[in-house]
Length: 338
View 1 (tube, rainbow, N blue to C red):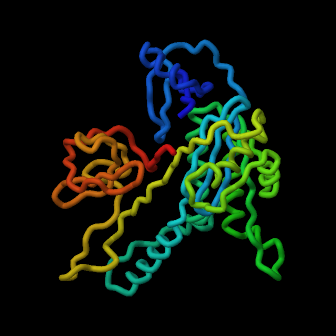
View 2: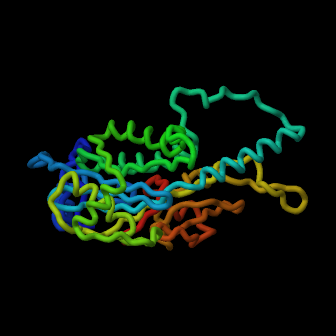
View 3: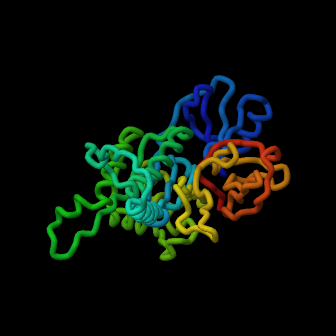
């Protein structure tokens, strides 16, 4: 990273600093390093010489598969984040519904029905809330390490059905989700909205092109839009000064199920799901004596833990002993720098 986030002794965000100065402060004992969701930060151990901050904006480009965030001031572009959207909740809920309806036809104990939470004043479908809640969580993380004053979002619209009235867009999950998101974002800072054609005009103004490959892990795929949105608020540049990308991938946790969908030979069903592996929270960043920095996956009946690579998510070990693992921090993301 070209800039390191800084917070004071009370964890109030200050202006970021350059890596060489951060290393010097750590060596002199003036600062303590820490990690925030994979982002290296420092906390001052002494009184800061100045707590004046510049205007910093976050540009947000929502998407169906990938989403982009850019943290920028008039002088510098501090961070570009490319995140994956949460899209698996709909399928998981469908499977859950099918299994529940199947159990009703069996002679199994039945609990009393819960209250109908769909009649709350503010109700979001689980899939809609999961998708927009990821954006909100990232913005809250950034607000804790950067002195952010403004957020600017590319406003997206729901497609209306042909031949139908335009009011049907108000009932779409997209409209309901973004309305909830905008109301929550107003608690974090000033919120500005831009239309899609406004974003294109800004790209054309600076001669920037957007890649047609939406799954590419490059600046031109999504972050070019988040950059022009943030630059429209704070200004200061006519071309991107920092194209480095920090990838954030939300981990998918399989919640505990009553049993596997299909039994094995003999009619036995294996355990499935859960968020705890032998006392360790799944997704936690750990340091193994042999494999280094990894994160925790599942576990086996032989009291061994599965470890996965932070960068690519691939399983690298199935037989890790709990005593060989040092817990560093809990996490529900994996990340890498590009």
